[in-house]
Image (cartoon, rainbow, N blue to C red; front, top):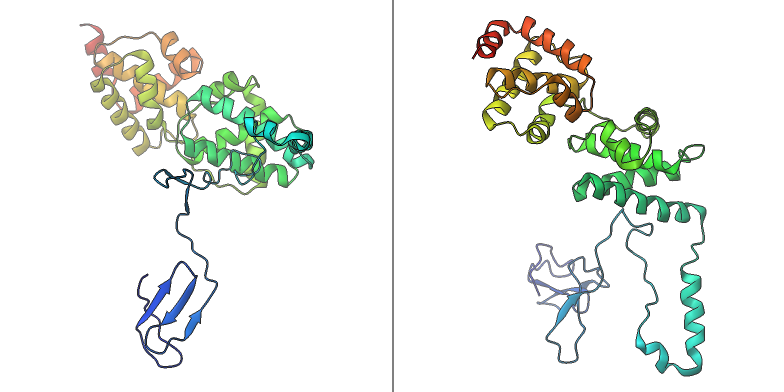
Length: 303
């Protein structure tokens, strides 16, 4: 029981108490029941053992990654079936019919969300990204945006959109490798669903890709820090606008590796970033020319 800040409408007393067991708000002074049948939004706990010592929460939290959002129940397969005698066949039939999902949307969601979990696991994405992607895919299905497109491409597009919204750096090449869909198709689907669902996506920050690329290339923290500084200088002179974030990030990392004597070939950097050597070469030239890094790079090259 806890006190309330409300007043009793009969005696204007503030000496009220909330009876959570009965779902009532009552006045201690005059006994008036002010509210009844109140909903308790706190956690619900229930005893599952006979002695009452083991307590568990009744049900898992809702999730977008399940076709029924985690609200459904299912008939299990326990040894209690065989205690039912002649009624057990009826329960087996009920269990079989339970798996026959009624609507087309539910059938689509059940298959697509399983694929979404698989791709998310392959890419090692955080749980919040997976939830966001499932929410986007569910909206796309409800608006009929999946019709005429492959389910896998829409799943990949939704995951890419969720990664962009949560600033989790993943490239279209990585999405394509995980889903088995061409990156051009994923890009087209991503742009389509974000436009139709009016999802606002901020431009990718090239600095977000630095830790992953540097880890794959086994570069030191000093080289990582230098590449981030190079990207900040490039942003100040508006060199990052209109250019792919992965290409400019890879080029900055390549320049930083030359300066710190941790030489990596353009081919190695390009393979990690998922871009071409030509892109690395062009961005490299732009960076050292516009940021006056030519002398610094050449000095360390001679060492």
